[in-house]
Image (cartoon, rainbow, N blue to C red; front, side, top):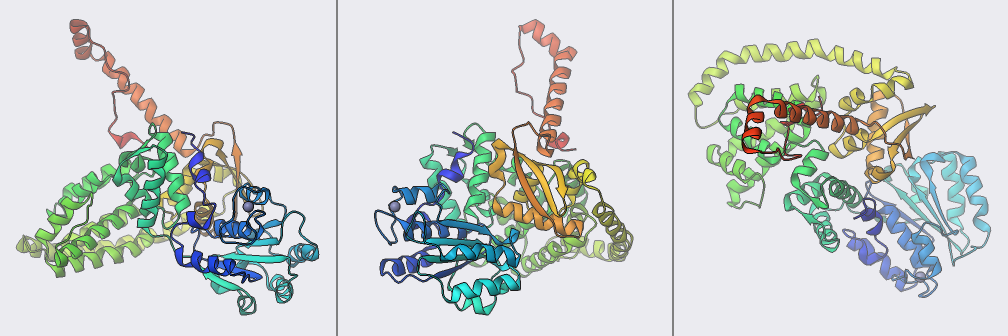
Length: 538
Ligand SMILES: [Zn+2]
């Protein structure tokens, strides 16, 4: 299956395709079918919920040649087709973020008076409309007050609070819902079955959860996994792509927490650190396990979960109150992670806190001893580490912040490791390469075959994190490249493959292996060697 097909092929083309937004779709469809058409619509909602998609469908509803104005455009006439292909001359898609000045808005509105060339209505889709300047809003307001009858406005924004009330009062407002994990997972399952792609249920669960309410992100992740894994999506593959620690390891971690085995825990954390573990994700998973344990304690119900083993073990050992305490420790530590010198040490502190400061039922005597012995030391360490390390981090941040553009290219890997971003955004960062910057526009390159990794949402998140990091607002501009770019992901994969080759060579040269081969005329199987992941990514 073609790598770039899924997201484009399954982009909703009609209201009935649009999942997770049923109430809005119903209201819109009713008003269209009863010919109560408003002249301006405002669509609000977080990134990736489908505002632009909904706007394009609405443009089709208004301009379909076969069916007239209706909620069910034919998708076959010239107007419908050209809207789907993004070539409809009367649909003006404007990104307000890049055209904030009043001159831009005036220029745009000058053409409003002319009749549509191709369709029934001229449709102006203004995305991220909250970015317009006050003057631009005023210019727009004049048109919104008395728009020509052949013009429709669709305004879209992620930040509803920033729209002036004068504009709000002239628009029909629709708030799009965040798409639920279940809706995403159901839709993804449906699509994959239709595409004859084999998948593991746990993998789909993980993708749906990490997509953070965006169907598009979920599809792009699924595609990437398919191209990595011979037309199938496995849990292992998803973990690999996003550098997530697999459930087995998280269950092991929980087991050691329950056994209060701090020493093994620290060794284990070191080990997964070299597998580029995402410690924020790990902590979130532990929180989710504790949450499910709390539910299990009260209801005796357990959802089909990869963490069933840990949930049962926690619930056997802890009472309701203990679970609440641990949950509290973890959630407050999650906030503290941002203040820790790095995620790893923040995570280690959390684990120590969980074991030393939570009254487990068993070993309570041992616990008491530990508590009184270690408390003063722990507190001291905590104070010391904050005192010592925070200024260093500040310094380093500033240091990188004042880097020239060449340095950003050469230090990209370090910068990415320090950005506060989720796994999906990190995946994007690891697949792009810095090219140059012109003022606040930072140009990056991405390989043609990976372009779907760059969703609107992940780009926006990366842009935000990079702006915070550099201490100034920057804009990410992505260009496609046909060259085989030397991205972080490529380098890490190449390192890994080199190590495999080395290991194969070592094994082939091993005297014992040689002896066996000679004696039994044996051959080693190609690609049968796997490296303990420790070597990947360091
Ligand atoms: Zn049509």
